[in-house]
Amino acid sequence: MKILATDLDRTLLPNGSWPADPGAIELFNKLTEAHDVLIVYVSGRNLALTEQAIKEFGVRYPDILCGDVGTSIRKYENGEWTFDEGWIEQVKKESPRWDALAIRDAVAEIDAMQEQESEHQNPFKQSYYVEHEKKDQVLKKVDERVKGKFDEVIIYSFDSQNGKGLLDFLPASATKQTALEYVAKEYAVAKENVVFCGDSGNDIFPLTAGFCGVLVKNADKQLVENVKKAMHQNPQLKVYFAKGGFRGLHGYYTSGVIEGACYYGVFDCSD
Ligand SMILES: [Mg+2]
Image 1 (cartoon, protein in one colour):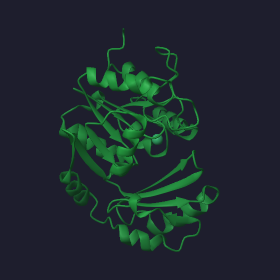
Image 2 (cartoon, rainbow, N blue to C red; image 1 turned 60 degrees about the vertical axis):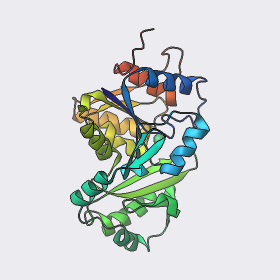
Image 3 (cartoon, rainbow, N blue to C red; image 1 turned 90 degrees about the vertical axis):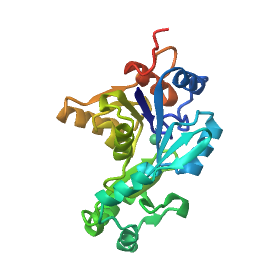
Image 4 (cartoon, helix red, strand yellow; image 1 turned 180 degrees about the horizontal axis):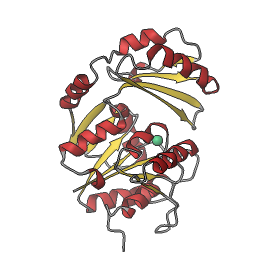
C-alpha cells in the first residue's frame, strides 16, 4: 500500500489567488477511491475547520487526519473519528520539557505578537499572530526567551491570503513531519512509498524528511528556495515540482497533488 499525504490550504484546497481547475477535486476523489492508497490530510486546521473544508470544497474524507500542525492524529472509519491517544503518549515521552503555559508566560511581553483564538490552541500547540513587517525583531526576542528550553520547535509562516504572520510553538516531537512518520510506521509503509504534497511554511519538514515530496505549482517562493537548498545539501531527497500541462490540468492546488501522485505512481495515470 502507498500513502498519499497532503497539506490542505492552498495545496489540496483551491483557496488561494490562482483560479482552480474545474473538476480537479472530483478527479482527486475518483482516483483516490479507485486505487489502494491511504489518504492522510496533514494540516494546521483543527477537526472542526477540516470538516468545514470537506463540506465547502467537496474533497473526500481522509483515512487519517494529522491536524493542528501534526499535534493531533485521528482516524476516520465508518463515518466516525477516533482520536489517537498513542500519539499523545509518544509526544509526552519524547518532549518531556514541553510546557505550553510556560511558553505563554515567556512570550507574553513581546510586542507585535498576539495570541491566536482559543480554538487554535491545544495542549501541544501555542499559536500567535505576528505583524509580518516586524517578524525579525519578534523572532529574535522569541529565540532569546524560548529557544531550546522546552523541547520545542518554533515555526513561522506567512499567510499570503490575509497578510498575517503565524507563529507556532510545538513540541519538537509533534510536527507535520513526525506525525506523518508515526502514521507511516503504524501502517508499515516505507518512506519511499509515502508521498507528501505541500505549498508553504511548515511543509518544509515533511518535504525534506525522506518522503517523496511534491510542491504544487503555487508553492511559496520561500519554500521553493528552502527545498532546493535542502536538495543541494542532500542529493538523496526526492521532490517533484508540479509544472502543469498534465492531462489538461494547470498544476495549482489539487491539480498539482494529482500530478505529483501520478509522477510517483500512486495512481495509474496512463489512460
Ligand atoms: Mg498550505
